[in-house]
Image (tube, rainbow, N blue to C red; front, side):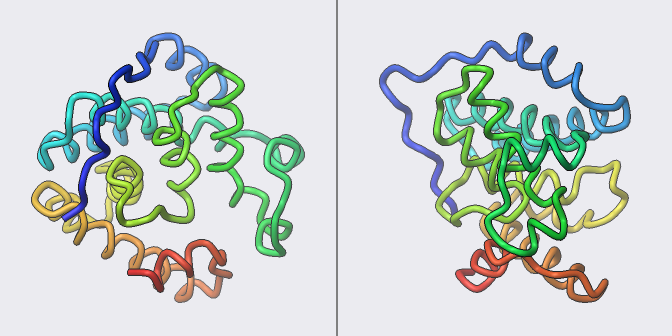
Length: 192
């Protein structure tokens, strides 16, 4: 079982409508529809796993921001998140989580749990990061993808098991397609 983040005494208040406008302005209609499905599922997962109200709010914001940088061109992605290894040089889209984190920081998001979840939705998070795990799983199995329905059901009863399975599914998919697996994803996979 993943433990939710303890409530902080002065939890950051999130201006979700303002962030929604910023994200909406930077992505395609199709991408925004995906983002909305991830928000809905991630919040359902958080509620089902009895997250605190503060962590449900973190999940909602992180899910909203997770693909904010996904539709940027390669040069902009790499300017926001300079490559740290050859996989990122060869596949600039792989840095969109880190670029999304930078954008969120520029927009005023300071909650490290939210920022870690945005960055970690691509490569994985520590198993102890419940907010990040909820967003990661929701991104992998939101209904619009048409795959991984079993993960969606599992996440509603055991987020830890669903997260472990989701990371495994991603690694297996990349290997099956002959794509490079990012070192951070391999690290997350091996840690599980």
